[in-house]
Image 1 (cartoon, rainbow, N blue to C red):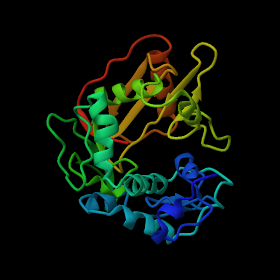
Image 2 (image 1 turned 135 degrees about the horizontal axis):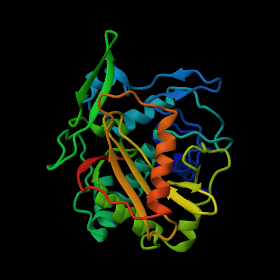
Image 3 (image 1 turned 180 degrees about the horizontal axis):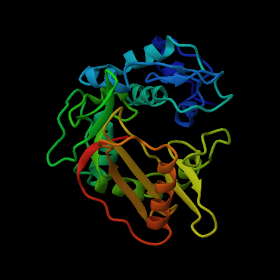
Length: 294
């Protein structure tokens, strides 16, 4: 029988049709609290997460329940289980579920299950802390102010805006260790790992089709399948995390934009070339510097 989220978190007033699997697969239909597209493609703003509005608000503290309640104040995108749409709200709810079921904080469970066993020395849940542990990679954010493009160093920011959906600090080395261990079968039984890798047919194909917590991407006969989950906090940073199915080859990287416009046409092609070079034709090295990572 499917586990209904409302049975564990009754005070939130969730649609009783939403299951735990729907959260992990992004088929719940819940509005993304950092902003989302409505069914006709119109952008519906969420909590301040872009542009100068986010920059001016980047030290604000949010509680996970506050994020979820904001999302629930917006209409659902679709009936639970009928479609696919990536939503940070799903993973914030997953965090609340972890805390409800275990009786421990998300930070405590992360340390017990992953950070400690894998020796992830650079991975922390910062809470409301806004300072990265030294040494760290600086993150730069490009924004418009009164019609002028400007750049700000946003290495200090409060990640509680994406609680459970990106509020972590890690290093490229730790991301490598984690993703290699996960795909190498060191963290989950083979049956559960196979479930993670079952792609949903309606998911966004840009990085592959989405399973449970990762994208499954087919790079063709010369390279085969790669698994990934890239991400970024609202501004300044992005993280890449790719692996072969057996975990023997990985690509992890930390990115920042600087004073350059994002080229939505060129970036996917450059990323595809990088992934193919690293996983199909050779090894990729990564610097071990701290940065926010999803």
